[in-house]
Image (cartoon, helix red, strand yellow):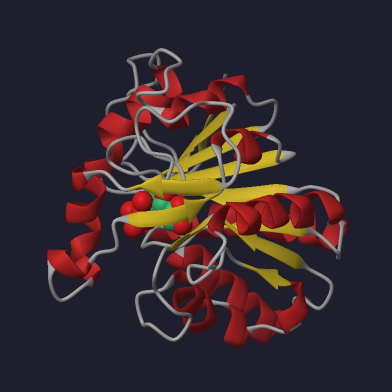
Amino acid sequence: MLVILKDNYDAMSREAALIVVDRLRKKPNLVLGLATGSTPLGLYRELIRMHVDEGLDFSKVVTFNLDEYVGLSPRHDQSYQYFMRENLFKHINIPQQNIHLPDGMAQDIDGFCDWYESEISKAGGIDLQVLGIGPNGHIAFNEPGSSLGSRTRIKTLTENTMRTNARFFKDILEVPKYAITMGVGTIMDSRELLLLANGAGKADAIRAAVEGPLTGQCPASIIQLHRKTFVILDREAGCKLSGSYPGTWRSSFLLDR
Ligand code: F6R
């Protein structure tokens, strides 16, 4: 695991973009795993900027998103389909048929989840998976207590996650209770992981994920077993990591674990 500490959110986002762009230039038909939420917005903005200013080409990229709320149609402004379209896809030249997100309106959810797993396999597996982390240590919607070998499936959101995500809805009662999510095992099959976190609200979860015991109570702690993971943090999210860090912060400080 390579932990990269940056001074602020913008620097974190630029560093993440450098990794994505490097992989994209090496493999134009990159299979890219994507996350929603506040954290990757800066990364997506940077990718869009590079597409517009420098002609960064997404025409062969294939994407798989981590999760989607059950019961929200792609037109709902809080669906992850909508989020991805507004914040990335409509601004770049990715063909519609290369985009995959879980279908929150699927009638046969188990059948859909099996199909999603098989599409990932058919694409050759995910090369690089972008991840955020919940304040409770979740990755995708794998909430504390999730089994660490899990595959794509339906999960019940915890009260904690519903409260956290209520900020995007008019009322907490509107927050869906269920989501379809890639499993921890699905995520771990990705060749590389790129976990991003910013803000003081993520500091405890990051400490637990990077330095804590490996446990389903902090699903993100599984990354300690992954062969190639980058964790890119801003100053606040990294502030509870152990004292093995030098006291001074550099613009890019790498800690190899
Ligand atoms: C979203 C996802 C979630 C978020 C996490 C952090 O696709 O998988 O695990 O990454 O809840 O959300 P933000 O970035 O909004 O703090």
